[in-house]
Length: 494
Image (cartoon, rainbow, N blue to C red; front, side, top):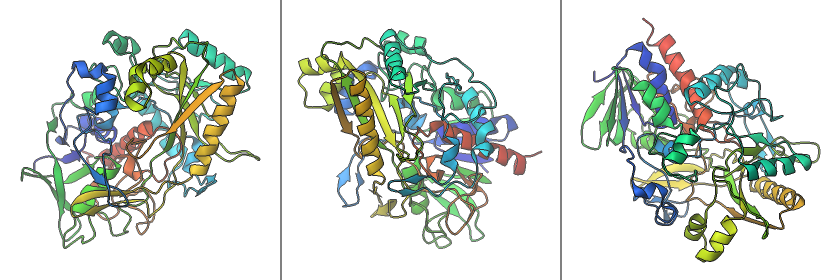
């Protein structure tokens, strides 16, 4: 055997699982198709990042009409988290049950918030989260405090927070994984979609993987693309096969390649024992793909200014839960500060206008839940990934943006602009190998173990039964810690 467990992918799920298993002394091999990001002048070049897409792979998937598109995923050590906004927010306790939306109802989870709370707490400690658990009325119970206080507002953000409070809202600090001093010292001035090459984002490489690699029994191999997993007639996964032809064997395997690539790998691993794909007797692999409904909303006053450098400190959950006269709509949070070069690279605005707008705008991110739908799915067509995302619950998102715009105008912004994100912007892809108690209707159990293959675990966003309406990174990490503890207790016990 080449390892005691092979983990495929080094993003939030794979890195956190490796950290959870590393103290056992078992041989852990992590296979990552990408390489380490290295610092370069392009790290701070908005035109290169947003206009040219220099960090995006040269990759095209097919959409539901068989038209090619660039999906915007990243392949490198640490996965997509190297570019994320590091908003590490717990799902609300209600998200684990059935929730009614204008576009339908969610199915609920096989576990409750209470079943995952201790793992949320441990994930916050591993990822050095900065936050405050007492400001947001929707915040679920915590068994302990955040390890660090929240990132403080800059003066213009503090003024915005007070204006929102006077309007009767409940702005709270975003729980963040950031060493802001280190980030700014590296010459970075904004945040979302910028690569972390200085170690200041608390991403999968900086935290989870770094923790795992302090143990000599953990090995990271980069540039290793797994093309398929082999299995035997009795239902055991036996090997991971690389594009080089190399085969790695182990008694246990964990897939953490991301919602789309994990589904594609399982489907690509079909054989005589598993004719529809690995872990797919339920015919659920690839189904129920979800991607948050998101819009950027910019509020400005022609005579005002926003001098904030790091504005991503505030969020609103006043519209998260439904009420008697309004359905559940979603979460609102600040984007990393939009700059003139970002606007010039992503809109038709001339440079002078982009600078004018960016110098005055407060930049919000409105996010609503996308509901699971078995026809929203990942398949393979002639070996290529086909993603037929069938967006749902759009009515709720339209209403959320409308509510936000009304609030912003009420507190003194005469100009409010919005733009919805399209399929080229991966807004928290999830749901293609859903968790559940019924093997006929789900892919993994509540510990992320495959119903079909007892030695296969899936520990990424693909297992999420619902997308909720907050960033999923912390939930992925918490589930990986839960799965890791289960593996230690049931498989790696001395």
